[in-house]
Structure formats: structure tokens, C-alpha cells
Figure 1 (tube, rainbow, N blue to C red):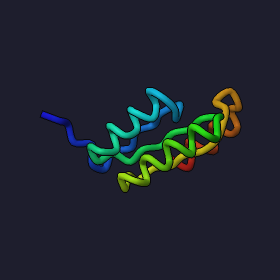
Figure 2 (figure 1 turned 120 degrees about the horizontal axis):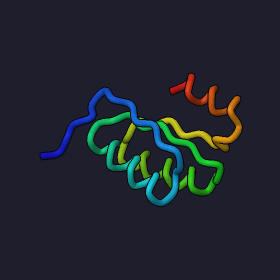
Figure 3 (figure 1 turned 135 degrees about the vertical axis):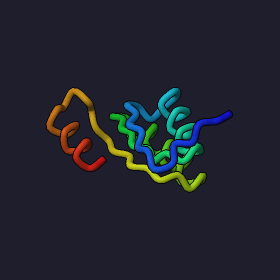
Length: 77
């Protein structure tokens, strides 16, 4: 039995590989997904994938070692 994450928000660091797969998995189960990555190509690929599945998401380019940018991102989530 699959868990439903409707009306839940999932925060994921990284938009490539495992991060992209986790975003898709939670999104297909109803979660709103927020993720970030410093690689614009991985962000674009993940955005395109989630858009194709009509998954609500927030995706931003940032390096999580930049605490000011991370704080701003978290406020937007």
C-alpha cells in the first residue's frame, strides 16, 4: 500500500540522480516538492520531469553553503 502525501511539502537537496527520483516519487504520491541544486542543468531536467507529470514544485539554483540564500529559499517554501 502506497502512502499518500497530499497537502504535504517535501524538501529535497539536490536535483539530479537520487534527488530527482525522490522528487518524482513524492510528487506522484501527491506531495508538493521543493528542491535546490547548484547545477542549472540538473535543475532544468528535474523541472522538466516534474512539469511533465504536473507535479507542484519549487526549484531554485543555490549552493546550500550560502546560508543567506538557503534562508530565503526556506522562507519561500
